[in-house]
Length: 619
Image 1 (cartoon, rainbow, N blue to C red):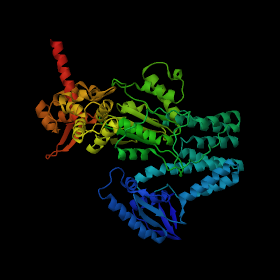
Image 2: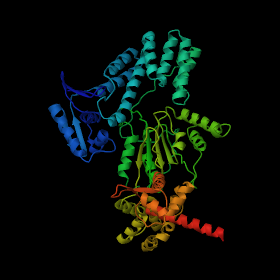
Image 3: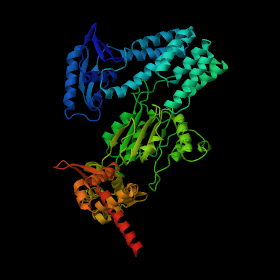
Image 4: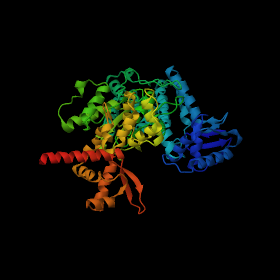
């Protein structure tokens, strides 16, 4: 039996092509083949079939696709149900991806050993296996996850094959081929460098230099970066006639399966310490790690572009989750992990030029070199240009913590596909290109109890169930509040837990009690309120004193003597800023809004303090 993935997904038995119908069946087959005999979980299959919004009947539909494949493939391919998913075993089957990788690996070894004729032949056979764009008949979710590394493997094999050809005296035919490839892939610098070498060897030095100047312009216009080492070395070689300057392909050693390590010592790792008591968020953690992790260790290691956004109200655990994920996947990013905070401790937004200078220093630039002359846009543009040049081609993970808005992010997003970006933000950043946003909600009751118990730990006897329930209810699922409450109990082992529970049960005292050391619920939740416009702050002050519960735009408009459109616009802006939550739709089809209880109490406190200051000034 033969399977084809390097083109339209196909299965053949001898000369007979097996008729597979529909992108979903093609996707299931391709996913199981790419797993190389490992079990693929139902959750992973669901993501690759339907993305992040699977149907309620997903398990039944997956079973149907598996049953259909069993009938089509027959006994020579075993589709086995093994928890938590399915496994495909096809002993003796020919799979074009596996054959491609074997030939590619043999060709690279021959090239490193300077057996150029063998290398060219092996790599040509590997490339001949491609019958068109890889995985051409699968869902876009599987294509997004797998095609980039397959295409990268193909292009790298092509570059290695072209590297072997000149040693066999095939300069002239290569120039024509490379001219077409550079036109198709204008920002791929190694191809352009190889074209320059071919032109120079063919006695066309001026044309070689023109190709370099053209490439410099394309890189600046398309990516905002300067040429990398390959193109720079080719340019110097063309100027001096020293073809020894031309870079050779990097060795592509394999990774030891199962091994995870941080970046080399020379690579920056700016992450804060991982959170010890990390409870819950398993689903979010697994999905974020899967999105940031490239192919398994025994497959070709390539990196896919990722821009992941974690949204949610202040104190809901966005930073803890992002740091946890970054520590888990750090070994996949050999050039380092960067972690700038985008707000000062007082809640004010950091200037982009200060953040860029910090990142450039971490990437190896001397502090004095980042002090570009002038202020304003000139300095910022210079730093952005340096940053994009420094990150181009590096396999980095950048965690941008507590982003204010899309404008702030625009200067900090790399433009090349090797670097992954994980962003946390209290607002909903919906216009960041190429991104996926995930909203983090407050914890459920079970997770809240588990987190409280973990923070309290063994420093005191277990908190009585009724008292623990009171504390958990007062914290309203906010991880920050739960950590503060647990830390207060852990640091005072002889202090009755009932005492803290009584204080937290009083709404007027609750937010002031939820403070210890640098952790402060009132300060944290008041920070986004300070970022609001004057109109929004006055609006919040007017509705904060209402009874807890959901309300509609029309009810708010009536109570505040506003037009319904104005009230709805203000409420929606507060939802976007993670100050209010959506609470569903009422019987009349009107959206309902609500405060998180702690956010409401903080807003009430801010309103009352502002009123006290006004009375003091009037007196």
